Length: 253
Image (cartoon, rainbow, N blue to C red):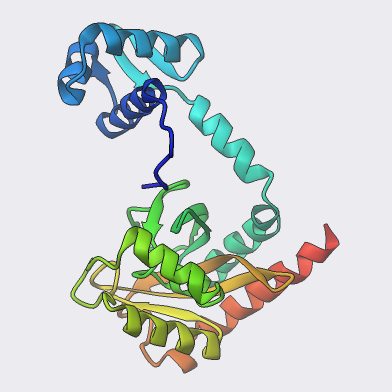
């Protein structure tokens, strides 16, 4: 959830609730949406008609769904980001070199957002997609980013999103998380040892432009293919090389 507005506009909130519900359901009829949201049918119809008029909702056979205009907007936003421009080719190269699943992630509103993903020849298929959001404390990419944010900002993120347990190995203590972030900063990369998904390990390195952390790249693989002797892990050096090239390429733009 984002920060609470001081003076929320209820009409806008209703439209956003309808969009969120359509996104969750995939598609729905008017009555189904009204029942789901406990709104009057007339009010829901007015919101849907307005969204349809502006191209954000498609109506087919009395069923409503979100349009690909959201993809258009998201694609434009992503395409204008410097970190995406310089990192996307290296994400593909690293996936090919490692054979595994590689992600480029940034932080927005205290959560990690996937900007880019690439699959190597033996990569596992996870529940990730471009634009999806994940909590930071239970992921390698999240800890890589958090380790380079001011302590005050990390405290804000924890206060906003908490430290919920995702698996039995998830860090749920503020003090333990800060200890892990200190270790992450010292060694230059972060790890996820089955903290987000049992049977999966990840290694991630931060991307920094002018000393500011702008994102992270992660490699994910089954525990059988990522050794928990982290310092000697085969993926660490390729990951470091990739982030180093990305950071240097920023200055060529």
